[in-house]
Length: 238
Length: 87
Image (cartoon, rainbow over all chains, first blue to last red; front, side, top):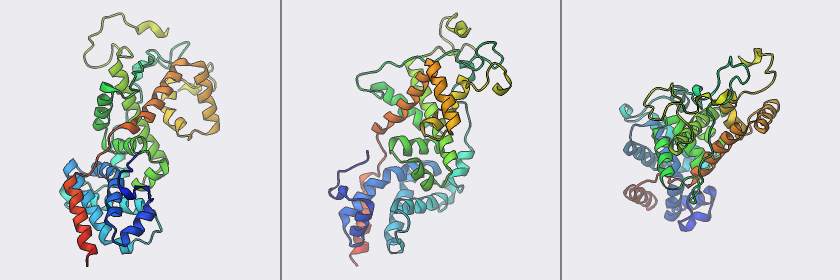
């Protein structure tokens, strides 16, 4: 998933760390390349701009470099790095950085249903309460796979538009390939909290792809423009 | 809610299912819930499609580009590293 380009890329963090302590510059470069993407993603949850996120990551590496002697290896290198990162992200230059822990950022984000309620039959429906009224249609499968061409742009835009905590979690889990435990540890959030954020993020991205494919009629009652012909699939559910 | 409807019994409605999908895919549903979930899927092609879409979304994002530190910043770090270790 990540990179393997640098020569020392075959080593794990512990191996690289040993070389690092001996002053091996390549090992340091590899670690920077390996961990910076995720560090940038997490920093971005705390700070308003990409430029500030880069600064925070930069400062983290500098602090790590200088504090290397103090790292005893009781936790993983990644845990240690992200601990430094979140501390720096939360303070220093305080105006640009949010002083709330990740769990607080997450709690402040809007909570929406995974699918608009109008897509389902009402709870008092005689035969099929809560069942699909406007079900999902199968997506076309392009040759390039799910994320070919324009869909890729739609997905990227959808992820960028996510609230920060949701964006961070889906990026770490589904783009970077971290496990749930790794995410919870780095962000200091509970398993349940992590799942909620992941759920909202994935639901939003799925909905964006669905809209792109036009794979369902927009419910007539929804806010916004309806440019579709009347008498669509409204009565399907009964 | 659904529990009070005598016709529904233990049945999961689609609208509830879509909120449980991530828990399901993460293996976080307790056994009884998972069974209700899977039973519903065997009877509901729409929810089956929905779950597949969620699965496809999560499985496909690995090909997206990841952010990186720009070269100038990497160079600064390497330079600082060199300074630190040349003492």
